[in-house]
Amino acid sequence: MGRVAIIGAGIGGLATAIGLQRHGWDVAVFERSGPNSQVGAGLSLFANGFRALDALEIGDAVRAIAGEQQPLINGQRRRDGRWLATMPASATRELRVVHRADLHRVLTDALEPGSITYGTEVVDLPTGFDVVVAADGLRSPTRGTAVRYSGCTSWRGVTERPVDLLGGAGESLGRGERFGLAPLPDGRVYWFGVVSMPAGSTFPDEFAEVRRRFAGWHAPIAEVLDATDPAAVVRTDIHDLARPLPSFVRGTTVLLGDAAHAMTPDLGQGANMALEDAATLTRLLSTLPRSEALITYDRKRRPRTQATARKARTMGRLLQSRSPLRDVLLRLTPPSVAAHQLAALQDWSQPEVPSGRS
Ligand SMILES: Cc1cc2nc3c(=O)[nH]c(=O)nc-3n(C[C@H](O)[C@H](O)[C@H](O)COP(=O)(O)OP(=O)(O)OC[C@H]3O[C@@H](n4cnc5c(N)ncnc54)[C@H](O)[C@@H]3O)c2cc1C
Image (cartoon, rainbow, N blue to C red):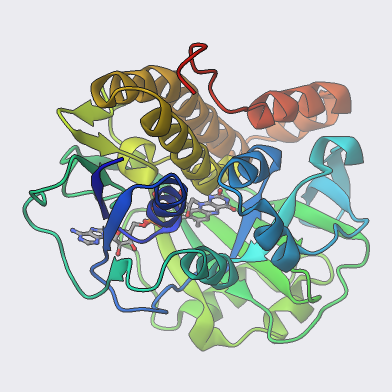
């Protein structure tokens, strides 16, 4: 098929490498970090992410680490635990939360040994390749465009032992702050706290700040924090792209994942979109002439991902709002409307390729 260089062994780069390798491409992945250096906590995978993984023929391997869904109420509640809005179970039937490190392991194991060169920071675009995929993340040096701070920072953690979620998951909302709870397949709990504050704010003891803000909220939040090793908590200021890009393609270089469309995590879709990108690019590069494949990738991916980034930012503003109207709005939105919006977000399938080409 040809030679492809992939910059970045994140979820997007690995998924693309798997897809292209399985379609006969000679794949070289360059990653600046070392192996097993992935930090992070939980990651939500939605129906669209699983469909993309299926297209890449690794859906079942990921399902094996994702386990069965637990029967929990999901939605938004107040900091005292009273529900404001709940999502019909059917809308999140395929939602699973996995540990990011587990997903990375499955993706890495699906590649032929030696496909990834670790500890290599790509400074100039690699030469001698037919296609270069820049999957180098939020601050992609290949892309070059600025990022903007969302106004919020986040702390993420995973408990060291199972904690009973007492029948509920989802997000709990304060004024300018919220706390999320999600079960991992083994009963441990992935949690995140999001707080509106100036970029770059720091605290002498970050975990003490998390406790100060959230430990007095509804059960089992204090218990979840008690069960967390403070040293394993990840702090991330949240950014997205300052401006949507006019194109994801420059010559034979193609941007993918956060490099193309970094979005705030408010819909839990960034990695899911990277998986869609990977499946789409694989399909197009394996069936169409190269330049046509890249143009089609840009045409298919830009509208959906940029619209999702806009929605994510809007959702973030709503959930972080200090206005009491936010709670009224959430209470009055019929579950069917929220379910419909979530279904639209998860509605993705492989691109059709003109007949005779596949
Ligand atoms: C707080 C938070 C929570 C989130 N939760 C979710 C969620 O629940 N569900 C979801 O779908 N998404 C979520 N996301 C978004 C998700 O993490 C990203 O969209 C996803 O990781 C993007 O994958 P990627 O491969 O494009 O980029 P990355 O994962 O950032 O990978 C880029 C890789 O490129 C490497 N790299 C960078 N520059 C170079 C270089 N010059 N040379 C070599 N290597 C380089 C980096 O080391 C890195 O390994 C969340 C994000 C945040 C911040």
